[in-house]
Length: 186
Image (cartoon, rainbow, N blue to C red; front, top):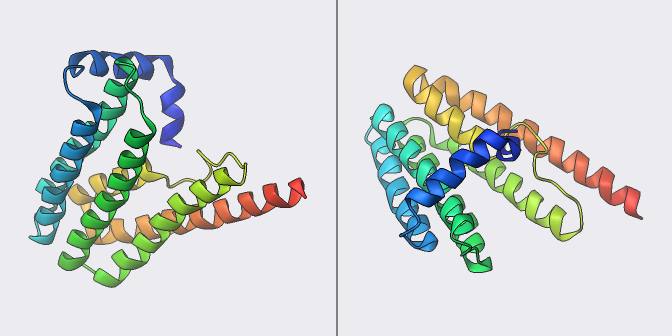
């Protein structure tokens, strides 16, 4: 859902400005820095400091936006960069959920992580089979990060249940959508 913002002209202008500001840094370096930063977020969640974890998570998310902006602005987009970005996003998701799980509820975080990875896998597999999946479901990565961020300041334990619901609504929505699209192709 939040990925649809990427088509907004104002958002595109902001992304171009960010790309211009950080153009001197290689995009893959920014991606790597984002991964390192997210480890600190997971660590602070583990220590029981969700506010600090959330702020660091936001910094990592910002860097995740910057890497793509710089790559597009400087015309340095590569297949490797896209692969690194996706892979490091999955690692970051796992690190943050592990940190939260070790401090709050490991079981629910593990179940959320399975669902989050299914969302990513279903998009990749669906698109490999010719089905456009981006934007299907209410809980893509941006929404999941936003839920964690917001509930870190309200009540993270309640936020985990909200996240659990959003993740599995998305899993079932994508499963249904991809299955329906594949059936119509046969």
